[in-house]
Length: 193
Image (cartoon, rainbow, N blue to C red):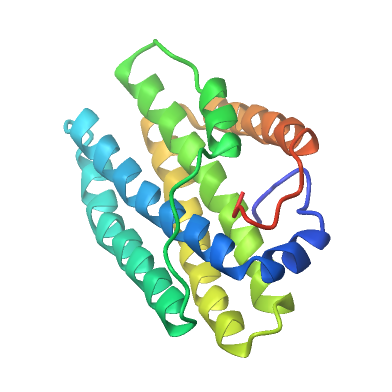
């Protein structure tokens, strides 16, 4: 369903579990950035009425996820650590084409967001299946379902604002590029991506 070209290395879950405070901290900031990305899309493209209507509730949902991750940290007597540079997201941002029409810009940013949601969904699935903490298994299963819905929404919105054939071709380019990015990134248990 997600179309990702490279699955996450199975060792990632084991590494993440060993650095639970770090992965939960990184996850919290990922949720915060997801909310602010939706806000940014709304404020940058207010004329995109369907997108604004669809993303407004996602802002609330993503902020709710941030708060849920904070609760998981507190439940385990762990502290929210400092935010770190997200190399994966920055490399994906480098691939986003600048310029073109406003519709082209919307499509690029929606595909960028869809890809991050797809990878998050895949990682949440791995955690929901393989992490030893049963509460976290359930926690990540719920988040996996949510991220899958966000991924679909971003793809559907991109197809709404762009010509479907071109959008799907560009999506494949994003997927190919993301595979290259992952092939060249170190496997780290302290990062969600």
